[in-house]
Length: 287
Ligand code: NDP
Image (cartoon, rainbow, N blue to C red; front, side, top):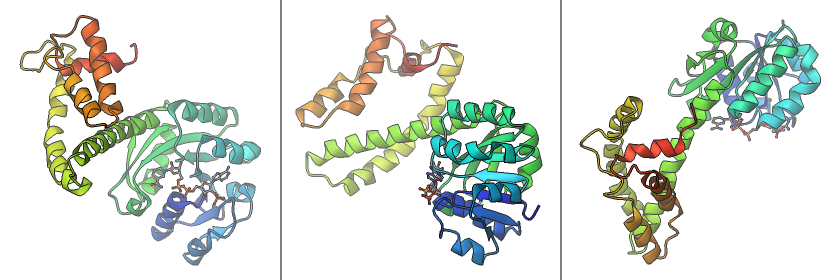
């Protein structure tokens, strides 16, 4: 093959992935739907080609870093037979179900499929401050590990291609809800004239200290006993005072009302004397 890997998609992330491979001395072919985005990579030694098919044929390993699942299907569908016998590493963000769908499609066409979920921003690629989670073909993961480690710390979660996405999106779900909680708190504080910066100076150390609680909640959840003594009960506080305070101040209570609703469901089911971690039971999948 003319190159070791072909990168499809030269957006912010795809460009960073290709650049890191070039920096590590790997030979790379690149393709982007809209031409003209490869100039800097070509100056660093990449071979730019004008069609997906040429990019696929250039390397045994094809890395897709496109916008979403639909763009991957649209781009790779027509070159399925060209991909036969090659390894496809798809680091485009997909849901677990979409990753499994691509893995099944790849299996039909004799393509070794590895799904990747990037937990990093482009500037972290190659700096080893980020993580990329993988699932799917174990053989592909093990063979490619020296190359994958060029980007970030790598971790393999199993042969079900959807698993990396589950972990990635679970982590992001926790993060976005924390941010939404912060926005709600900042909107509350603003009603008495506090700037977001001033609120942040108070909220940041408080939230950091509160993350210590997570390990204790995890112990209760994994133990499955929500009556463990020493916890604040759901009856003691169903957070209705927080919802009322928000309404009194004219701030949309949606984020905190959502938490109250999860608590209410457990209280209504007769678990009011149990701890806050019981909320987990309002959410979890049936096992
Ligand atoms: P960009 O918006 O910078 O780039 C998107 C890329 O996808 C471009 O190369 C674009 O090509 C291409 N593309 C979009 N639609 C199509 C299509 N229908 N057919 C072919 N190519 C298409 O996004 P990023 O590079 O930032 O992100 C790429 C992937 O990486 C996403 O799935 C994202 O979720 C994931 N990711 C990104 C992170 C980040 O911090 N940036 C972090 C973690 C994951 P064109 O130039 O022609 O528009």
